[in-house]
Amino acid sequence: MTATLQGISSMATRQVLNELAQAYGQRTGHKVVVESVGGVDAARRVAAGERFDFVVLAADAIDKLLAGGQAVAGSRVDLVESGVAIAVKEGAPRADISSEEALRRAVLAAETVGYSTGPSGVALVKLFERWDIAQDLQGRLVQAPPGVPVGALVARGDVALGFQQLSELIHLEGITILGPMPLAVQINTIFAGALCATSQQPDAVRALLAFMASPDAAAPKRRNGMEPA
Image 1 (cartoon, rainbow, N blue to C red):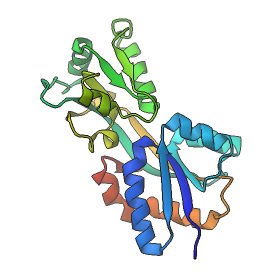
Image 2: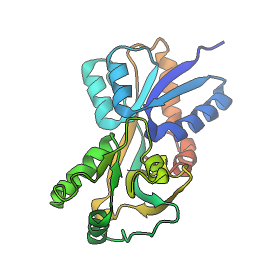
Image 3: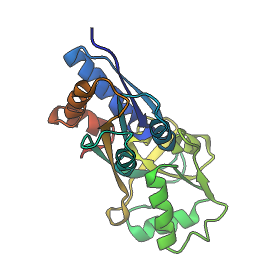
C-alpha cells in the first residue's frame, strides 16, 4: 500500500491539478491530494517547513523555495503556461478589449477594476503604471483577498472589470469572459512543480511530476484554460 502524496498549490492550478491527480491515481493506484490556497500563503507554509511532498506555484516562487532549500535542488518541472483573461458580470455591457489601446480605455471607463494577489496581479499593476493611469485608478482598484477568485467579486457586482488567470474564471457562474488580454500586453505565468524537502517519497513525487509534464497531461491543461509549458 503506497502512502498518499500530499501537495500544495496556488488557486490558479486547482482545477487542473485535481484532474491530473485523479488521472494519475487511476493509472498507478497512487493517491494524490492537493491543497489549493492563495499562492503567497502556499509559499509561506512550504518555506516554514510544513510537511508536503510537492508544491506547484508560479515559477519565480518555486525558484525562491529552491534557493531557500525548502524545495529540492534540480527538482523544478515546468507544468503549464497560464494567461490572463478579462471578465464582466453576466448581462453587463461587453467592453472592447480587442487592442492595447481599447483595453486601456476600458480600464479607465470601468467603475472598479479587480485583480489578484498573485504574480498576474503584480504584473497588471505594473502595466497600469506603464500606461500612466495608476493615479487615475486610485480608489477604483480592488484586490481580491488571497484564495478568493476575482471572478467571484465580478459575479457579486463588487467589481466591474476583472482580470485573472483564465483557469480561475472559466468554471465560475455569473460572469461573462470577454477574452484574453491583447497579445501585446498579455500576462503569461509559468507554473512549475517541485519536490519538497520534507517529502519522504522523492521517487514517487518525481514520477508524478513527470506525468504532469508529459503529453498525456496536455488535454486536461487545455480544458482548464492553460497550455503545456
